[in-house]
Length: 518
Image 1 (cartoon, rainbow, N blue to C red):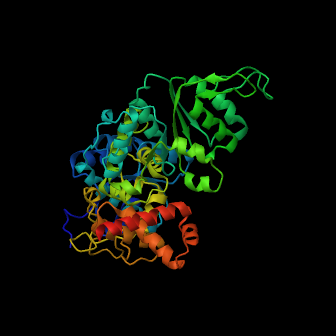
Image 2: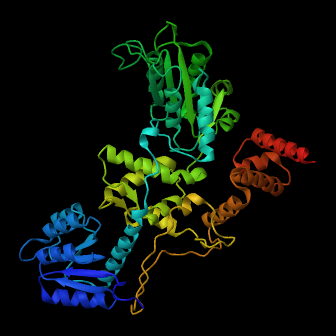
């Protein structure tokens, strides 16, 4: 049984004796230690002089100072206080003012006891979550990451090595990777460290420009060459002469435009739309795509000769799931940038919030992570992002994942970067409570869905194979597809979503590896 000093303290501030009594009784029956104040001024004094309450219920309309004023005074004393405002007048202004000044929530009178209990639990859990923030340490110096590329994982170190190799040359570079993985940052990083860093640099999103305008955008046009061409226009390639152009999502480019890009790469020549003059340009091309260009070449939707011209150096940017150990550094970098740009005040994360970010699958990669961090930093009421501040979609996805024991058993996750942010001690419900205070849900470790199955496979392979997880999974999937199709390579390639040439290449590699072992 919890002692009086261990019980969460709830301070109820209201000038109505009946409200203080009834609310105190409801929450007292849940095992909380109740303290009361009959005015905003008295409530402020209790916050200043006594033990900081774990939660405050504060009436908005009282004799003396208002609840909003009292809230501001209380949070000036302790910015980490969780305060729920109470009101019988639920206007838009009330809601806006309450949240603007950092209230945890506000609740309408008369009260629904179940709603009060639920709100109190979640607020006190937030208080417990906040205590872990004291251990948060800034992990990055944003001045060390001028290109905006953050990552100390082995996967990103390989990317940095290749960037260093190609930066000093004028070689064409093809950057591949999922949407949102940071391909444009890699391209900009190559430019910044290249011999052309003093020259112009332009990024063109090929997927965002209508097909009938992209040639004009890239190569320019002559006056009168088409409807609306009221004057001559200089295209991006001319503007980037002696510089670098980044062609993002080049897989979305039409075959006609691909032909003209090929001419630039082969001969360094362009022609404006509607013009006959051949113009020499000296431009380094860096291209990027999230599509399988090899498959597109086989399907005749991407020129094979252009593909080989682009693929002089290839950099594959890993997805965020492949380098999830970088998440704490990336989050820290993003928060520091938001503060520097005065877009948010939060500079820290609680342990539970960080663990949730590390466990999420991030289908939108770094771009999605950036949006979530920005959202959470704006929602956060103080200097720390708590678990409750994360978007509901993130919380639901993480709750649906299986949890693993944290002891030294075989199911224990071994990733030190996740373990560096252990779950904070969640509130243990008082033994006298008739309704237990919910803790973080723990799912069964046996897979009940495809995501759970993949999560289990990932954990096992991480323990056994170290950082070669993709290689192991790819090899097993190919082997399984060959077996499933009775050795029909064309059908196996179709199931796997790769070209037959790619499949044959992989099989040859595996055969060579086996031969070396013999």
